Image 1 (tube, rainbow over the protein chains, first blue to last red):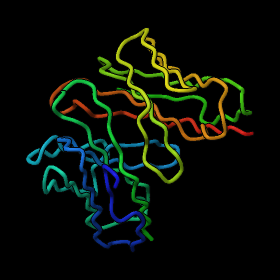
Image 2 (image 1 turned 180 degrees about the horizontal axis):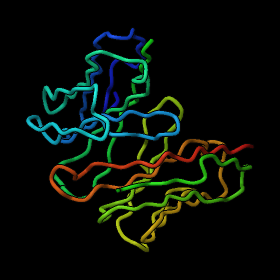
Image 3 (image 1 turned 180 degrees about the vertical axis):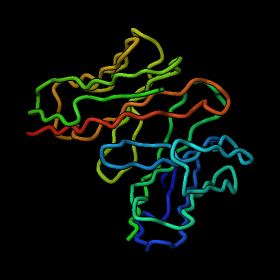
Length: 115
Length: 114
């Protein structure tokens, strides 16, 4: 089983619908992140969380919200989906025990299409 | 503003033809520079972390180097299975609400033909 699991892997939704993307991890990491990837724009940070009680906005948080339900679970919601939120979404984790440099581990991604 | 720029955007090589990918960065207080490999439809896979200028790390046909302004990913005698997008990222300054955040470049798409 993957260390970082995202569900669903693919989703097509209509404009205006609410949608939730889920992420769970078995690495025991404190830090979790949501990124989106668009062609030519690379990976951009949406939200991140350093522990269950901590939520921080990233560079492109407008139109998104998150919930850290447990150390292992971090979900991303689009309250009212719009077509320009069509993208590949990645969840990632890193070890917060060392507050220096630690690599991030990524899930397989969720391909979201808003029509 | 912290920024990461990768070049070229795409690189096509023949099998065995060595080359380098570039990652230029501007960040106030580099905490670490990361290289990732990403295959189509998959999440980025960690390759290397470099912490200080002059540092080098190797893994099979890949070698990453770091200067004060840029990093190179050298690919020696590449094989078709090295085809992927290679991402570079820098770690934001170690302030509590910034530590661990990665700033990514746009990536270099490498294609190695047999």
